[in-house]
Amino acid sequence: MDLSKLQAKGIGIRSTNYLRDIVVEYKIRKEKEVNANDFEAWVDLSDIKNSITGEMPVKIDIKKKGIELLTTNPGTIKMQFERIVEKTFPVSVEFTGTLKSGYSVLKTEPSPQTITIRDFESVIGSIKKIVVDIELAKVNQSNYSTTREYKAYDKNNEEINLEKKTDIAVNLQVAKEASIVPVITGSLRNDLVEISRKTGPEKVYITGPFSVLDRISELGIDTIDISNINKSNDVTRNIKLPEGVKLAEGMPQKATVSIVVEQLITKNITLTREDIGLLNRVSASEYLYEVLTDSITVNLKGKKADLDRLDKAALAPVVDVGNLVEGTHRLPVRFNLPLGVVLLGDYNTDVKLSISPVKGNMQ
View (cartoon, helix red, strand yellow):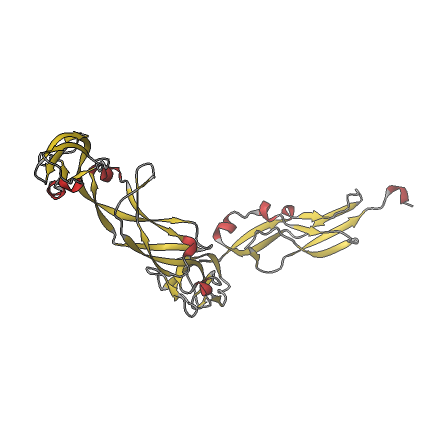
């Protein structure tokens, strides 16, 4: 059989059981030495044009004169023919195992990125994906290169055995994640308060020797002095890198710190004598306490939202009258202040304690 002509038609022989011995029965006119080389068995493939399965007659050519062919066993051979086609597949990279904590694969580059496979039509049709497997436990540097033989898988993720395979070169960019920590110096003016502080990016990926990266979890930036800030502001600074360490491809060289500040305001709340509570007073009826100060105007400083929520009841003003003797006393007023709100000044009130004689002790 002339396989080259068959292959020129884009057809191949799918089955292999046709490769077998053919037994021939013959007779000769006179005694001669006969061996297998005196016969040639072949199959005519000239009419094969498509994918078929059928019984093909075995034909015998006799190379020596005086030999007459009687029978051939088998007389036919079952053969399966199938179209040979080509298809180009993308090469994907899949990982097994894990990297060390904090490390990630940022970039994967197989070369070539596609591969053309020529095989039987049924084989090509069964290929779902072409994969190169990489063991992450073996990755030991930021720029990691290796060469692996690709594998073909069907839709059930079962490997397909292909006769011809090629190696695929794979380059990985592996980096470690590090948080950006701003370095802040100075203090805000007394009339300002910091509401929030946000860094962008919060994290970056860095590359370098793993022995160095293993010790890094944070990166600083050039110092930010907030002493001269008088309003909300975005401050951009260079990211500082240890020796031998680089920012991964695509990472910004600078970080921006967004500092939101608020101008503190003041608020006055006027308290009457009825608003001031007495703490640790003696409950006996002969003790009479009287707040003499008609009113107190309290000056407060803080964020607008906090001051807007603050009223007389929330302030809960009290004076401590414990251990007082009879007479008039100037006492400090205490307040219940929310976090971030401060008193501007000291506040006192006059309290008079009168003690009536006990009736049983009167002379």
